[in-house]
Amino acid sequence: MEQFLEFAGNHTLLVFALVTSFFVLVFTELRRKSSNVMSVEPNQAVKLINNDAAVVDLRSAEAFSRGHIVNARNIPFDELEASKDRLNHFRNKPLVVVCDAGLTSNKAANSLRNSGFASVYGLKGGMNAWGQAGLPVVTGKKTRSKK
Image (cartoon, rainbow, N blue to C red; front, side, top):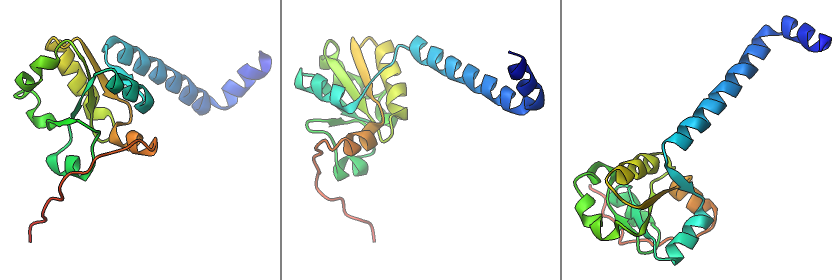
């Protein structure tokens, strides 16, 4: 204990950084738990999809056409609020929302839960994690580039 106090006295900046990191970690975890957003890993998402979950891809139409999960519906995040009626028949089914890196999907999952959807999951890591897991993607028609 004496050595710890001596170390803390000699390295106050390091001790302060350690304590700050600890509190940031605890705060982030508590905030994530309180938001009721459930994130699933790609392999858990596959299990949900095999058990009749629907997939909503929040990326742009161009990104969607470059590669998406089989049977995913493309509703860009900007249009989600206006397009919730298109998802009404999935109100009591599991929904997996997907974006590029998993950040936007958490916001969308929160929004859908607040709108009364029973079970909504965000794909942790988004399509990046899906691809890194080596899971299949479907590619759409190539979009024409403007000249």
